[in-house]
Length: 139
Image (tube, rainbow, N blue to C red; front, side):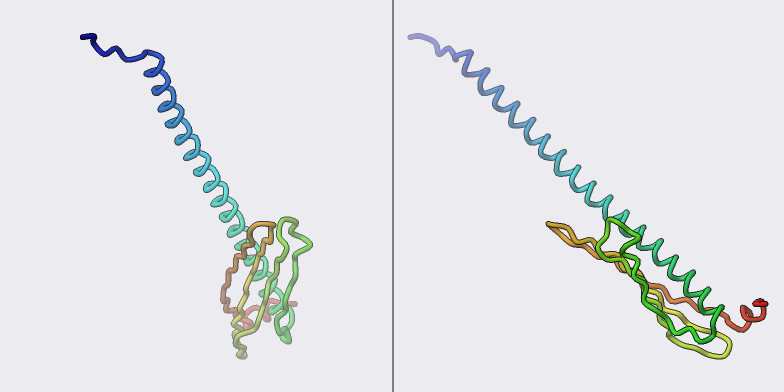
């Protein structure tokens, strides 16, 4: 009786196919991780830009309230100033007004509308301004 001798070419072929399968799995995993990191970075940048827009709106609201006692709030559209976003706006509203204080609500919104997905980031802040002391400092 003859002993079974495996075909050397068949063993090498199976080993190469297994190695290619492992390499393909690793490659697909790294591509998926790279795309997720890119998406997360884009979202982080959008959140930071929304925060900057909110800070700008708060500063504008404070200077407007301290400069004019009749200030009633406004909606600012800054879409033309920010290229990558289809919608960029700041909404400033007076929530409560007393003789000494003004509570201001500021909301910043950044919207990105692309071919595949759209995303919007919204941040809000409520600020209390002491108008009695600020109007004393105005010449």
